[in-house]
Length: 289
Image (cartoon, rainbow, N blue to C red; front, side, top):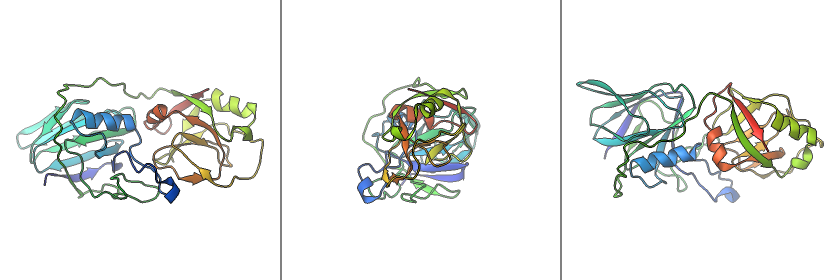
């Protein structure tokens, strides 16, 4: 079977698909790709079904060897400088365009200048062992395949679907500029006064260095509450803006907990959560209602 051998996973590389939807009642979160649009596009460009697994690469640095000829594509998220190395030299690989990597060659991803997460799809998908119907790595629960480590051998599947014949896919790419997204009031908006809502939507929030696949942690002027105490745990969704006692919101991403006892003041739309998944520590995020 064709496989990829990981020489260097970079800061964090995981296998991802669309996760485990519909199992929250069992205490199982969905997980899956943080930027679902970029994952879907990567699969489309190599003719994969959208549910096949890709590599989600955080801040570049991935290096893999291939043991047979493969067709690969790398999509935004974060644009990396890429190089294919072989016995007869090295050459740059295109972004947002399918390309071939021959048996015995190596693919290297550099560090992106903007954005955080890059998606690498191989024609046929990554055929690692599924867990509860998904190949997604959930870093919060520990479900799914392990976080990709140096020396990991990742099997590649096959697909009967034709290649789409796309030379390059124009797609918007993230920048390091402040990101503005829309929010709608959440189920516990009544725990916060109008002054807190004005503070939520009126200031620029800074992405914290402790952000991860669970959520984007935001630093700024804390949101005051009208009510004290905690809730009985409620169901949580991707895109929820949960406010812990610190008053500093956390925007939940793919590996968010299934339930939580802190109030959710607002929700970010699903498409905008994809954009938020590309925010880097130190970048600014602003909310508009």
